[in-house]
Image (cartoon, rainbow, N blue to C red; front, top):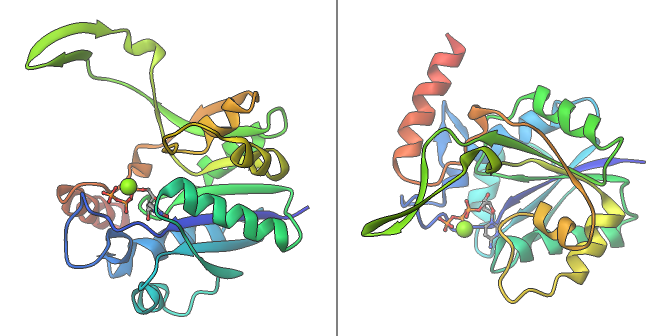
Length: 225
Ligand code: CTP
Ligand code: MG
């Protein structure tokens, strides 16, 4: 069956500030969204990209994509979880792929090695995600220091996240928590499936705050020279 990558790009990028949502800003002359798109579409095992964008973003999307063609562009929801759900339902009504990768547009520097690791891990699991270890001391506290948390049992979770389509669709439909989930792996896990962890990549860091953009521009310039 087919492997489809979903790019969620329907957010407003409020923490990043700026005149336009972060996924449409340019790094190295290319929109953040276009970087993510290119890295996914270039992978030989990915058959197509489904793009999820927000209301009123049509013009910005067209400019950012510069002629690149997703299999479809659909409207997202008010939260990331709702945007992913809309994408999964769209795919279900369009014939259901066997595998999906779900990726944040705000993570432009995706390597093919990460995709290889994820798809490899799907041979033995219904879900696989890239993670990085925590290197700082992690402590509770609010004004005054609280308990230190054992960082060896903590992971920093990235995207893309890879799933068997039928299972992640069913898990999204089952999710009943009051608050929306910030990623999809926790939704698959809540439905009773094991999620495999594979090695992530520092280049996959999400662009979230204003200063992330100047840092990314520098990293990108360095990686080309
Ligand atoms: N996203 C989405 N639909 C939403 C919210 C987020 O598709 N309703 C996407 C964003 O476009 C982004 C990814 O989910 O690519 C990760 O979310 P986040 O980093 O939180 O982006 P924003 O929600 O846009 O940023 P912020 O939370 O700072 O407003
Ligand atoms: Mg957000």
